[in-house]
Length: 216
Image (cartoon, rainbow, N blue to C red):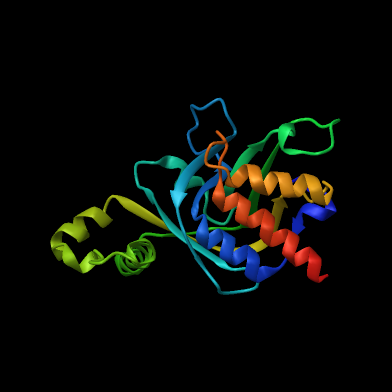
């Protein structure tokens, strides 16, 4: 993806952490429907990102009825992890000659998927996904809370995918090209609950980036 040098993030731990935090991703790949006029297709999926291998490991599952999975095995695939984002108004800047922009973070990962239909693999995958998103609840739901026969039937309707990441890129567009006063204005604006583009998560990321640059 297009990314000026000051927006690029290559630290593996930061990228893994971001993918895990924003794991509802978009998986792009070749079209499997011969009747479709489009050569590419995309599926929105909740994924599990594991800190394994050179760049990480992605696991998830498709609905079996979604024909996208049929064209994935062994073929280059792109997975996009969109993070928090927000419109940035020029009214937040001190510099008068400014235009609107957008701040955001995003990670793009490439790999060649392996398709899994083995019930044992699928069982582990749905357990991992459930544990990931049930943590923090007072009474977390587990796959074991449902009858085994019911889960076995549900597994018949899904197909698993596993993608060892072979290439990864991160873009943190957080007003790094603005002067200190403008960046301070962005922090204030994103943290202002009265602002229609109030985004405390992105505000914290801008502040964090400013602190990190101060250490360099």
